[in-house]
Image 1 (cartoon, helix red, strand yellow):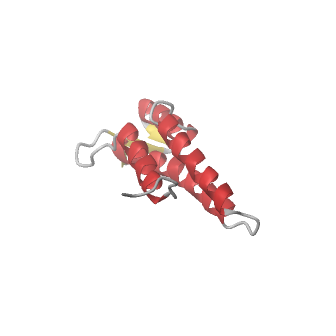
Image 2 (image 1 turned 120 degrees about the vertical axis):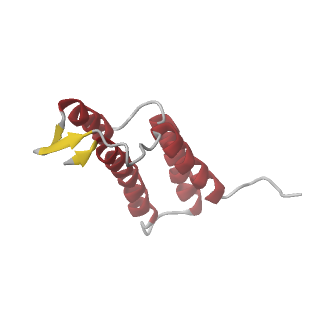
Length: 109
């Protein structure tokens, strides 16, 4: 048996890791410039902010599996032992962390 929170949390992280993996591959390109890298990271920040209100495919499928009570042939039960990650807060945290690591053109005083 899997808990409903585990299924949803795992799918949430899988969706985010898919986005981060693609960005990592893009940033490792030999033709990547600092400007292009900055744009890619900024784009991912916007994507994560959009996911706060529009879930990705894995999370949608996990929600349907929870409603059915089974995922990939395994039963799903409601368990209060594992907390459910707030998807909006999770994506906002990812966006905030990326923003903190971006280059800035503003002068610091």
